[in-house]
Length: 266
Image 1: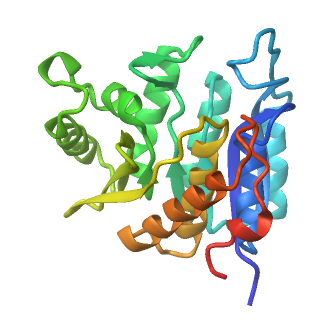
Image 2: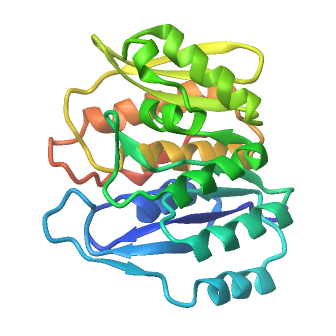
């Protein structure tokens, strides 16, 4: 049986186990080939003072070369995109490879604000890919941006806000949605909507802040997509694994997870 393969479009950071590097670790730890496509190159995460940001050179030729070598992919994970030409090429890829389960992580903002440098073109790119994705992974801020739901009609902790976001994203063509949530006492709660039912998926909240936890989750969801296992039970397994990994961290912001613990099938 041929080994499964996931293509990952995300930014590459020199410092930290984040973004593309974290995605790759998770995918490979689960016995799946990780085909990496850097979309942007950073010296460090954007919250580091003095980070440097560079365009990925020859992006179109890079993707063309991969497609000439590999014809099929079980899943495609799409993360940070900040260039119009890059977004066009990824759109072409997703439409061409309809057999590949697209996992869309629309990295644009958090805590009610857009990330510095986020442009309208990025938002429109993520919106355009919603109908082509097997699952989308917005946080609350990104969910509001994509859906157009106005926060002024709700409070941040209002469950009706989340329901409205899910409904609007469903109307935009979303098949499955994992709305990344916030701590609630001793639990961290994400909201999963499979187009029919809404599930509250709880895991233990770890009271430390780490870089790369969203990328860790994104990699795990991509593995589930490649195995055709996007469902509430498997997502719950992924969340609990992440809690266990964070529990054993020392409090240093940069994660370096034990590869054995990243395997969801042991």
